[in-house]
Image 1: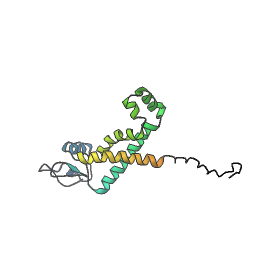
Image 2: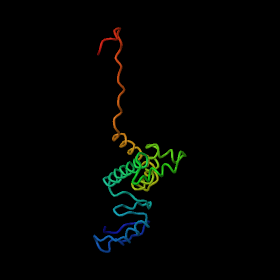
Image 3: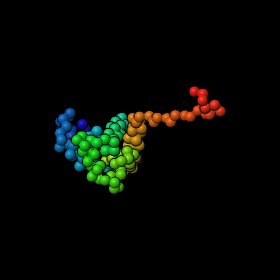
Image 4: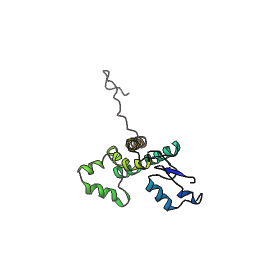
Amino acid sequence: LSGVAQHEGRAYDRIARQPGIFQPADLLYLRALGTEPGSAVTEGGGTQIGSAGDLLTRFVLAVLATWRVTHLLANEDGPADVVFRLRRWLGDGFVGSLMDCFNCTSVWIAAPFALFVSTDPLTWALSWLALSGGACLLERLGASPAKEAPQSMPKEGNEDVLR
């Protein structure tokens, strides 16, 4: 990271001290300004992802993480039966019933992961729903195919004939 960035009309070159060297304090400084490494600061003070590829990468990672955590909570017992015990402790109440449904759980799990994609309120809301939808699609793709019911043969008159 090098060069001078603009934030609210003021230039700062904190990161340009030593090109190629990024320190944890720099990350805290950027976060305090409302920016992230590799992002551009817009005139309104909000952040914008550096490239479309970066946004796509963040979205795909967030979909996979949403699916994994949701699958763990809704369909697995977890390591040492931790999730099973949590589900039993929650019981049949509202929160307990949410953990029984993959689609319901994915909506609430996707909300914090949407912050990884964007912090802009409108983009966050759209990402939230898209992440949940992506996790539900992955769950359907990974599910075993439903078995078809055997089709009955129409009876003609003679029931003694083997078909």
